[in-house]
Length: 316
Image (tube, rainbow, N blue to C red; front, side, top):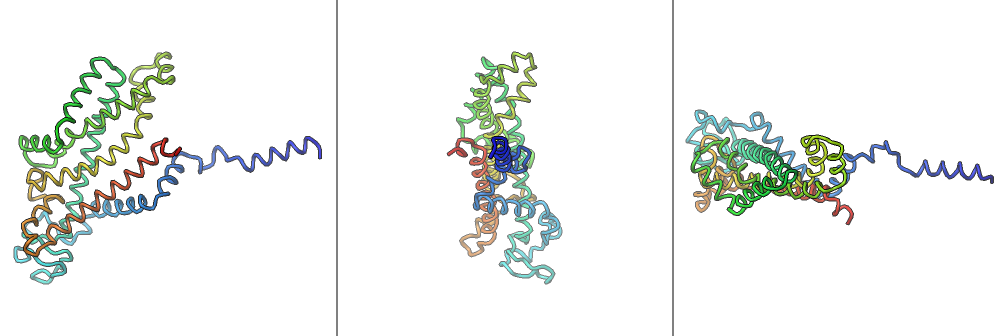
């Protein structure tokens, strides 16, 4: 066999075995999805989280009753057992009712909407504020960095629930006010993480090259620093959503969160707490199960995100 035929055969074999650079399997999104769904537990958590999100989004169409419409509630249907029918036999309460005659299934669906809205909104706002301050501190350095980091240290030295309780005691109840309180106790986590990641990237060669080329500081931060600092922040944000939902539930349980007319899961649990020892467990039990499922589902997804987005764990 000639040398030309051998070389052509080796080239053909290399073309068959080498993966194409344009192959869809080699795209970052495909790799991310393949690594994420490799865990059955994380997949189950994602499915559960999607179901809960759909239940919350379509609550007005799924829930058999509007628990916020006080005129539609009947006091004669208060504290009915799961599976009981309404006094006029027009509605069946599959999860029972509370002391005001609200259908617990409907109240949980609407409570999920509020809890997820508060948790996601506060996390996104805190992420934006903390990321901006962290990148600013890392890029400018000096007194600016010291000032921002010392404020973050003071913030983190106090318990989150204590700061939130003080703010709500001063401002009062309401969705906007509890979101403000949660943003106040969360932004420091993102600021410290963003600053730590940006300091590492700040001294790398590609940043020094961008500075040497005369690029504006805003372009360097947004086009170069920001994309390389997002991975740890995404993981922390996913975990903080569950933390924010739990903190909101705690504050509502203590009577400092949302008003009684718009109960979240925490307030629904508080409404039935006094009836636990009298056998009417369902008023607190079913909202507690819903809160548990939300927090567990988010934590399972966040834990898998940590493994997928951490290159050191991928190498191991």
